Amino acid sequence: MSLEDAKRLIQQYVDRYNSVRLHSAIGYVTPMDMLAGRQVEIHTERDRKLEAARQQRQSRRQHAA
Image (cartoon, rainbow, N blue to C red; front, side):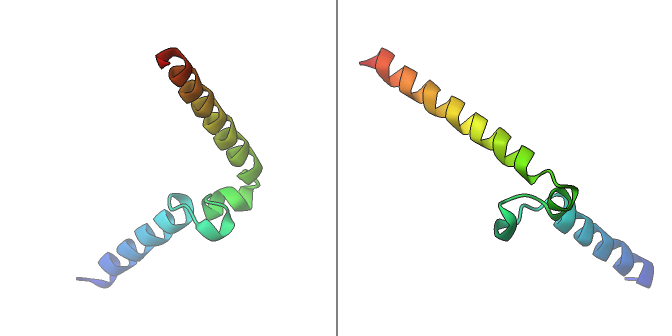
């Protein structure tokens, strides 16, 4: 492995860590999203999706009974 290979692999890791991996300590958002101030938008959208799923499950249960 060359020095350039090592640099490339480290950069890939850093990019993934900061832009893909969700971090529990900061509310399951990426550091890039947190830095950009998008955490409120992300949490609001998650809450909306969770509520829609809850209503859908409740509706299915009512129709099954």
